[in-house]
Image 1 (cartoon, rainbow, N blue to C red):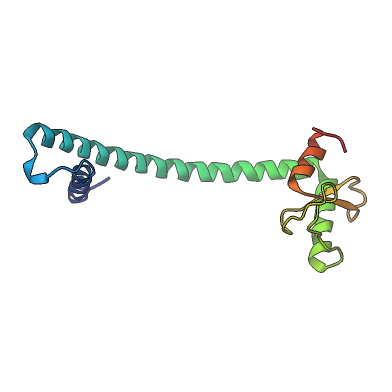
Image 2: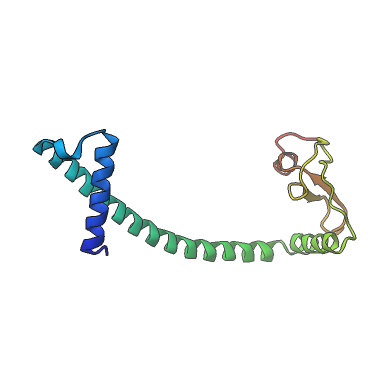
Length: 149
């Protein structure tokens, strides 16, 4: 919760912001103008405080839930696709040790991409080092068969 002194500081700051945005003279405000600006400033402080409090709670809860869901999804994928996981691991190790060099040109469109953008595609997971290299666009088209090559 926000304490009174912090609330007052934020209220005064918001009040001054509203007055300066509207190019008003703080000493020459009518009573109606002052009430309207005070109401807006009060509203801004309350809304900002509750919004931040809610977002912090939501983010904290959401991050933990997302982590659990992602971990469960990864475990399920690995369980259902052991050949893919094994082939990808062998390829990653071969690249790391220098046995295979990752190119920076797509084998389909022949465009240059930074090294981390090029993706490998296994035609046969029993041959983990026999791969083709595609840019993300061509790889997506190939995987989802939007356009056949």
